[in-house]
Image (cartoon, rainbow, N blue to C red; front, side, top):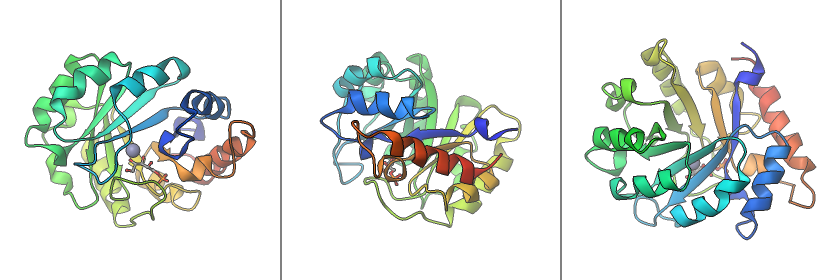
Length: 227
Ligand code: DX5
Ligand code: ZN
């Protein structure tokens, strides 16, 4: 395997909220593999971002993959709207309600790829009976709600166990929170292949000065090394 198999997914949570379209185009031109879209409701997490209408508005600016991370509860009633907005992948949290199995069925039923996310305090066992119905498992390496938090090192072991549980199923392991050139190699070595990064990608750059986005993406990719 080569480093090109590691996917870097910049989170627009760290972009200029008044300029999402141009920010997405800039970060893709600088080497982003996917665009990570953090939806927060002020209920499941203590912060509010945006909903399906914003996702629909930014969709035409995304040439790669629109990776929508739903930090909302309840979630089921909104899946169709995010799928209609053009999400390629929709990820829901196991902690967001009692019916994650139904939620994942609904995501695939709406025509999107299905992801399941686990908070740092959540046991891995809860995905045992979900692995045959997901395309992605997201291991949160911060408590969801805000960008720029510190990476929680105990989650590296969780990634390693998850990789073993997945076996040869075609499931991505995505890491979300505190990814930097320092922390990326730890999770890639443990088996992750999609790295979400907000602050570490957008720091130092802007739409009018996008080169730092490329430098930041390359720094993470190089540090991550081959899978
Ligand atoms: C946290 C979000 C993350 C966040 C990552 O709730 O799900 O995607 O934007 O930001 P950084 O990379 O700054 O930790
Ligand atoms: Zn996220």
